[in-house]
Image 1 (cartoon, rainbow, N blue to C red):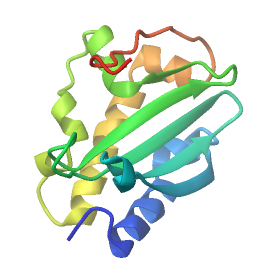
Image 2 (cartoon, helix red, strand yellow):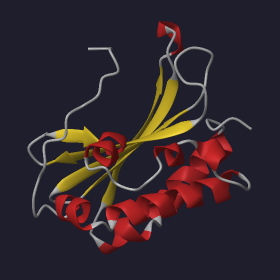
Image 3 (spheres, rainbow, N blue to C red):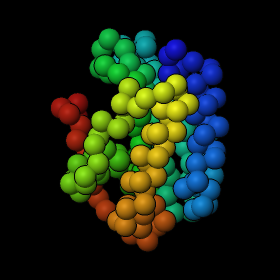
Image 4 (cartoon, rainbow, N blue to C red):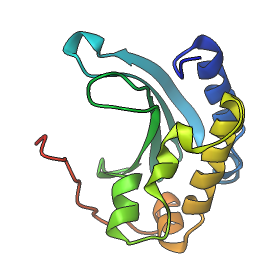
Amino acid sequence: MKISSKKNIDIIKTELLKFPFFLKHGFSFLEGNYTDLQTTGTFDKYAYIFINLKAKIKIKIIYKNNLQFKRDCFSVIIENDNGNYFFLSHYITYKQMHFNKDFFNLENYSGNFQQQFLSFLNFLDSIFQTKDLYEILIGKKWEAIPIDWHGYK
């Protein structure tokens, strides 16, 4: 079953709405949308945006195709109330954290789709709980993280 199936998209939204980190820190669901970029030859994605008074967390679900993406994956973007943002994967690299960036790829988790997505959320929770990132998410501080455009800029 494709990550973009209606059933899987419903699972994603349901689990994100129950995500304990969001609930504990006042993040609420802002929007969910679907972007079909097949016509440009790139990818399709769903984005779910959660926001509190100090930060916006955008979780994008990107499914594989024959061009740019070789596997179903997640992209997480953290944005502050001034519009500055960074990709969580870049943050992990920049801060030299001991987290495996392969955990953004769905196929690195076992079980059915819901189990895989819950495992991804556990991974996110463990990163969100690190001191520096936690302080960013609650608006206590901000760090400018360089964006690696992989030659696309």
